[in-house]
Image 1 (tube, one colour):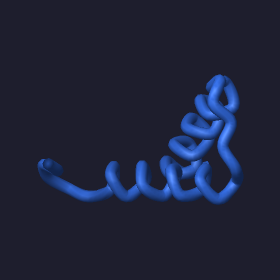
Image 2 (cartoon, one colour; image 1 turned 90 degrees about the vertical axis):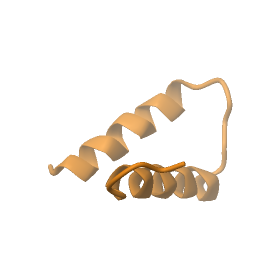
Image 3 (cartoon, helix red, strand yellow; image 1 turned 60 degrees about the horizontal axis):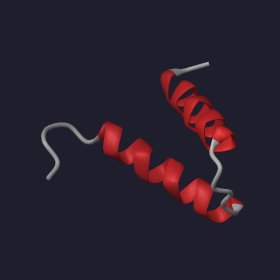
Image 4 (cartoon, helix red, strand yellow; image 1 turned 45 degrees about the vertical axis):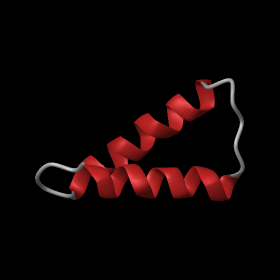
Length: 45
């Protein structure tokens, strides 16, 4: 398991524990946005 899979697992487990239920499309979109946010080097404003 690489680092990206670990991030996906962590965010997925947080979403499962969340009171707000979202559909699969939005879940995948949020995971991709978080992943891209973590990959981009430097400061993001």
